[in-house]
Length: 335
Image (cartoon, one colour):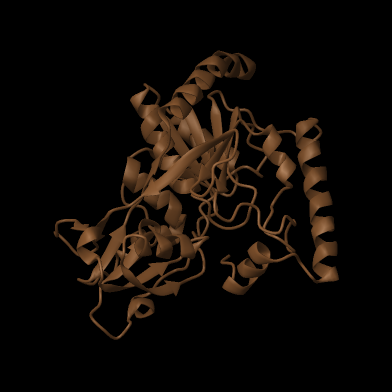
């Protein structure tokens, strides 16, 4: 579900003033602690796969850059000899049972993010409300490491490596848990994750820096050569974003000196052609996540702006080493 601009501004610019919201936050926090403790203590059983599991997530509501990082992980692990697969909840999709995505998945059926990951990497991707069951499909298909996209709070799938992505600009807002603030879990949760990846902004001690780079636009109606964003300097464009933090996309265009008319939509919005009919012939630039839904009714002036995540080689080397160390233990414990 998308978060309104008004709510996000309140979360990231001021402390909650409502006594009711603060009370609900405390109730939510208690429920989250109880649930996590049950899994950590083994009172609620989790599912162990016979391959290492990496969970990519965050502790705040809204977008932080998890999907670009997941794509970068797939590519980096593949270069190091692994055969990674990705499991996703498939938010925005209609499917209820676990399934492997084919080569031409429908985002209305399986969600936009799984379609983007599948299209960008060619890796095996499984979706399902029950992540362990969906991940098992990947194992049966020959995957030797599973990456769970947006699964930090889904403890039923036992994990070997946790990666928390932090918005380096907005950080943790007013510091309150939902619904008074943006936090899904307390900030102290960061002490237990294996890696803290900081997307943009100021990188703090112990965090891995990540930058999202996007300098070309790809026409949805082709074949047309990619368009360098530098060719749009000084020009006005419509910018469309149905992601957790649309302002990040808009700002990424402005820093490249493009005049932006903003069109934010709720996260995972199911687009129709009418949504993008702005009554003129200006170029329409959208995120790659939105493009996978709009490619079914493209127009000549619509463009996708894909981004790639840039992280230090040392991060991928350390992750690879950890996976090599846990792989024998994971196999032994499962057998």
